[in-house]
Length: 298
Image 1 (cartoon, rainbow, N blue to C red):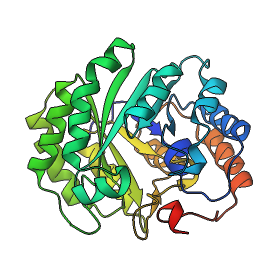
Image 2: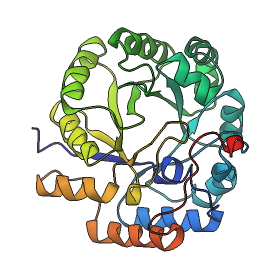
Image 3: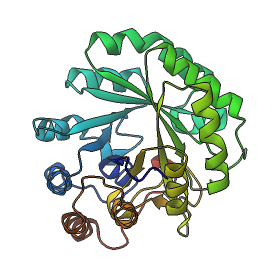
Image 4: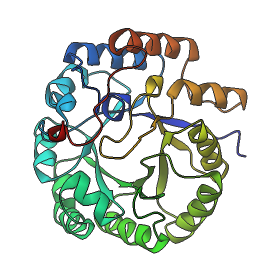
């Protein structure tokens, strides 16, 4: 393990952590949470998704929230983008880093994005120059990359195909997502060396969900095979609202604690991070009510 190498934690709580909470968190409270994370030393934050409000009502205030947080220096704010209209809204607000999400299976892509995987890839091919022209950084995210809840394992060739399209439009940062927490350390140790061999110029991150503690084991396994950007959520909140029995995200505070013990530095102050966690819990509760499934199904 390369202990001398610094760890980057991408905080996804304000997006993935909140997206399926039933009770709407006021925009000002979200901004306060983000400020507490920044005060703790978090410097990379996925703050929202520019998704249509009818799909994820909790994120309807993405544009307003960005206006409140964007001027904080030294922090990179990333927005998740599901489609072209979402991209338009993000670029209009001046968002400087966007990640375009694609599901590795048609079933997952149809459930989450209402189009096939190939349709998503065709869209990516169209918008690459547009993002560059706007002066924004374009990143890729592959959901269900480590397994689909219905279809099971995803062939590595399918992941290669998606990454090639991201590379065609200039994306050098790609996130591999275990969207429902079904990966194992063995699978992660096998996949990432194959990815790195095929795409040596890509900077990889991993997005992990946590069922019965397995997410923490997977995070360590990813680090051991060279992944230095780990995605996590304050207080372990989150979970895909379209997946059956979703686990929450790996908790940011647990990752920081683990890697502190290993002598790996993230630049995050654990005490202040715990204060941020307690502040989040004071707003959403210890066990907040979650929306599972499509909002219109309730």
